[in-house]
Image (tube, rainbow, N blue to C red):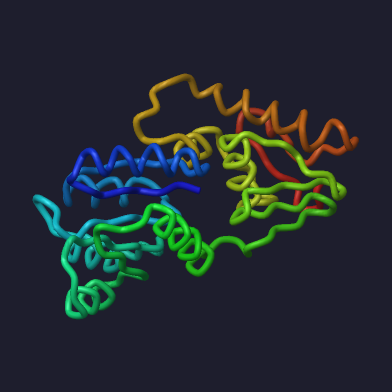
Length: 225
């Protein structure tokens, strides 16, 4: 799952990025309103953590412009203010949830996961492809009842392919969704992770769910292979 954090307090933004990455999220960070708006338009995020008090363009305006442009990502707004009018304005501009600073990190992660479950527009909470079962919210994958031990990055690749099951997904699209915007490495890192997935969810079970379409990308078989 890919998340954008738009927060001008750099220490807080860095702490959120580290913590959310440890939870298995891919995280991009912006430190002002215009940069956040640009990143949200360039990438497909499952959720956006958006501070209200931002330089350049405040969170209300960023949120309103995102919704006007058709952005469907779940938006959790943060503010140092406290009061029902701030919460009401955040929700009126298109936010899905609201959290006042200072906040509990544990609560933020829980509300972020709940937000992604509620606003997830491309897939159900549990995805089943034959005997391959993927639980994005629980970060679990099983094959024939046996749990596959995947790294957070391998799991993110699998979830993205699962959301597009039956479609050919180019390497570049996988890279853009699963790796953060700062990644400048080789595109073949996708191939490395797909190979690891095959070793864990296909080979031990005599299946071939993750297919290579030469010159085009990868496809997850809708029937589980």
